[in-house]
Length: 308
Image 1 (cartoon, helix red, strand yellow):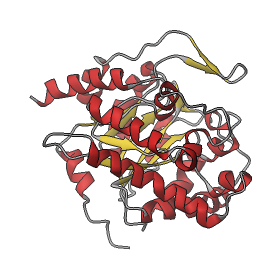
Image 2 (tube, helix red, strand yellow):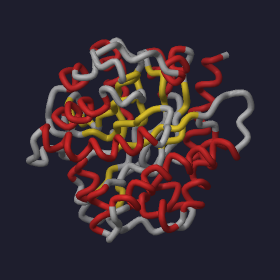
Image 3 (cartoon, rainbow, N blue to C red):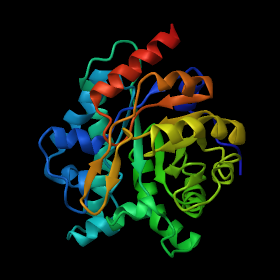
């Protein structure tokens, strides 16, 4: 198979860094929306698309240059459990890309281009039981390929600049997702959710990163939805193992308690951390859960200083 030609997004990374947005769910909650059902933010693709656009605009206004779509929890299986057929499910997934594009066009951004990353969450997110923080679903790689291929094909066809394979807890699932992105014609980043120097499923992080090293479609490798402290340690390792640009967007540092379905602890996300990330090879930097527009604005200011 011929090598994938360089994309505009890959070229932008080479000239980077680029600022990602923050948590979609916390911004939607801040706007007054209830995300307590299984579909989480994906429900608003059907029920309140204007709210999704508003959330993207808030992050663009804060200085984000890449919007991650509200499709993390979107899947044919998940929508099907709520009575939606395959055609309507596919329409909603594609709509997530359109809504991010709408926000990018409508929010003034100066001379810098705005980008759209189509979020592809792990299989565990669809289960809505915290499995995305554990991995090890009892499915084979082939079964995970069968789950991810239809949704990845829909999102790729919708025309994002990049696919965000994010919050991946398990190297087996990463293997499946990487198999699907080969030949799709859209660049992708691969981002693990981690604990210390291992994936959430317990595999050595160096081995997990190495899976993406020779996949031409993958333009960045890294971590998200982890503590800022774990992110600090992972960036240099991802760069060393893969030789690719690194993507990093940790949580606020608070801890999600699935029993109470709430957050505990104090935030440790600090915009000054971006200095170390950039020095270690990061080219996509942002925040995940509980990092809102204020956090992204402070991070974007740090990035601007380093560009100058």
